Amino acid sequence: MSSADEQDRASIMTYIPQYQKDIWVEHAAALGMSQSEFVRTMVQAGRRDFPVDTLEKSEPAPSESTVEPQDLEHRVLTLIDDAQVLTWDALLAELRGDIESDLEATLATLQTANQIRYDGRKGGYVSVGDE
Image 1 (cartoon, rainbow, N blue to C red):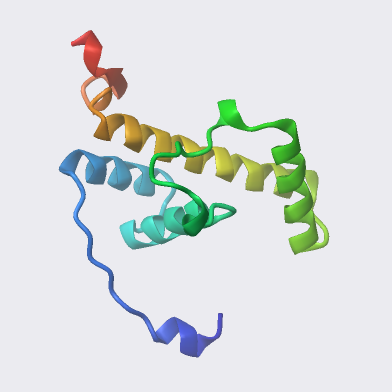
Image 2 (cartoon, rainbow, N blue to C red; image 1 turned 45 degrees about the vertical axis):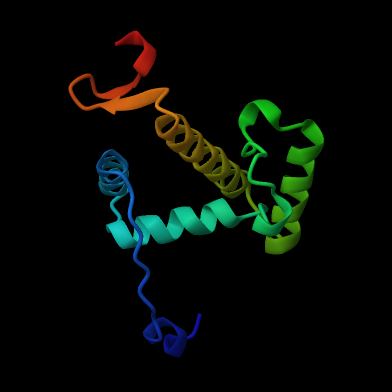
């Protein structure tokens, strides 16, 4: 990205539930990121290999349990083709980022469906059915 591109910025405004913002703020802080940087990073990570126009709204997001070995092979080949050379650690970091993005999306979906929620007092996610 050129410095001209970096200076030509646009603002986006969206509304999310307060509990979701609280989670994002916590995750951003844990990663040492600003909230803007965190949201940009997560959106870009979520877009990786998931073209929106090919997914139907009723189709669930890919998750670790639905990933076939061929999908992982394809992802590894794509990463190596794009970078030309990747170390074990760099490749693992790229793939770990995918599962983190998938987990984040899954948690958001489960929270939206009111199946789980983040409980600050307990320091983690809890099933709504257990309350």
